[in-house]
Length: 135
Image (tube, rainbow, N blue to C red):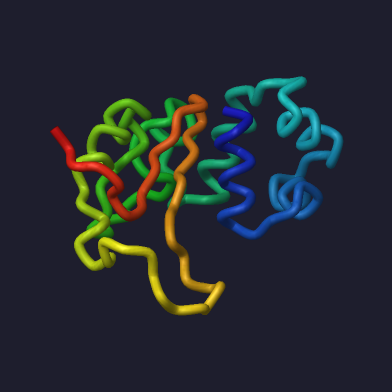
């Protein structure tokens, strides 16, 4: 839950001190929650859900679903996608369809030639011009 609290504060643009003020608790209490030293109790969670009614309790407590209730954007809910499944999905995307087969002849250093996506489980995906024919 420590990580979800940090994500929530970042999403709301709240500092730990401002969050403590909104929650009517001391700043050290929030600091201890954010550092993982303490875990939030029932009263704190209930107060948080009352103060932020759009916050999704399933996300806050269980890490499931989207951060906010009623968040019906056309984005898939990727909170339950494992890095292996994400890697498999991403490897099926043909990111080279608009890329030339040879090295670009431009001299603009701001144009990306390859992209590497690093995942939390220390795996990665490489996207760029294909140098070999897939089997």
